[in-house]
Length: 124
Image (cartoon, rainbow, N blue to C red; front, side, top):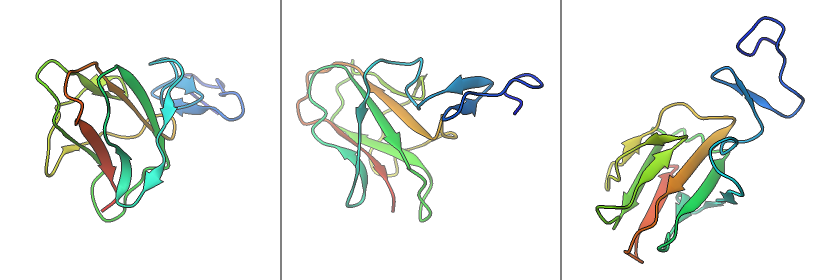
């Protein structure tokens, strides 16, 4: 009912996130995001490939661990962003994520040369 201003209501189906009415986690960050579906252990993309990608994860709310992203085999020049913010590629415990954006997370992966790179938003 009050998204960034009194009486500013978001259209039906939109989320109020940081004062903006958004349709989805990748809204205003990238176009044509790929939906990542839940698999055993979490939301996984392996291999990521070598091209730039925009990945949208919805419904990620782990109860047995912190919301986090784990990635592997990223070369030094490959970028990783979650909800528009640069994050480090960390293996093992991964990088703990801030709050979700419009009901999920938008993961942007820059182009890179390592074909075996991957990422996971674990549920355990």
